[in-house]
Length: 167
Image (cartoon, helix red, strand yellow):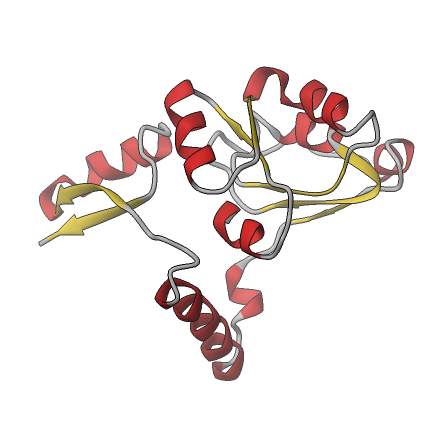
């Protein structure tokens, strides 16, 4: 995601759980990278207190509240994954008190429900990969018989990049 956003001209701020992942995030287009425990403060400091217009959060529970604190008024939080668990509930009043924020949970199925949308989305991705604007790295390969271990490693956030099961 950071590679695509960078290609579109965005200033990309990433958040990570480890120093190893910080280096990886920078290598994939992040202009700034902060650790989970203090990223909201750093984002606010970096933006002069204003916050950012959009946050894409694939982590969930561990980052959700700080992701909301990063948003500028009328900002959008797109929560699209829960690798650390489900985010806590948010009241509508709280969204208003925090700056009339918007929260969404986009699911791929709703953006590719019909064949035309699926082909358009797939072609966009293949064009970006084929042009070299996005590089896909296979960082982990598991024998098919170790599928359960592969899932545990993904869930425990021990993996980066693509994970491939080999028959």
